[in-house]
Image (cartoon, protein in one colour):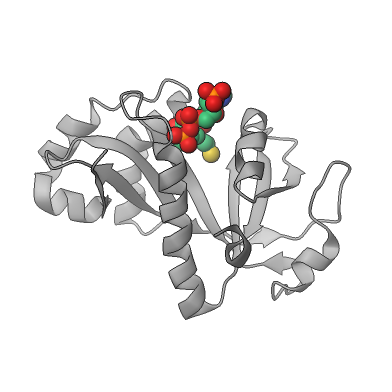
Length: 182
Ligand SMILES: CC(C)(COP(=O)(O)OP(=O)(O)OC[C@H]1O[C@@H](n2cnc3c(N)ncnc32)[C@H](O)[C@@H]1OP(=O)(O)O)[C@@H](O)C(=O)NCCC(=O)NCCS
């Protein structure tokens, strides 16, 4: 499908606030309603307050087919726990200070139910390409995703490895090196 990727604040310049809320109300992501709610209720606020930036895949009518959200979120380099796929040496190459590593975060990744299968993988690649540009400028090589257990295989396939499972949220923290997963 033909689409372009546009940052949410630039989308607003084109569609206006009303246009955004009208188009986003049509967005459905039934595999994970949380990502649908994020786009409808939080993405704009986070973008406006520099918490994160959301990028939309849109067609010429500004229909939204998918999106991803990027941010910076440092991560604590944990002692390896049972099941962890990332060793201590991994963090040593990442400019760790006091056990804290600077990392980019792919906070959200979603494609709408009415978009073609595979769009999500394309958007993930675009997100990694964006971040790689920032890596070249800023020198941060780690990228993190926090996902549900059922998405472990998906992200492993894209080069991410399990760092730890958060016992409170149940989310799996996965990490990759930008230089290696592109
Ligand atoms: C994750 C996502 C962007 C991947 O898009 P894609 O690369 O185009 O690939 P698909 O949508 O075909 O999904 C790949 C596989 O993962 C499965 N999958 C995707 N999201 C899933 C979820 N939240 N729960 C369970 N399985 C899921 C799909 O059913 C599919 O399995 P299949 O190949 O056996 O049909 C898209 O499936 C999506 O929007 N999922 C819901 C949101 C989500 O889970 N995002 C990740 C949170 S970090």
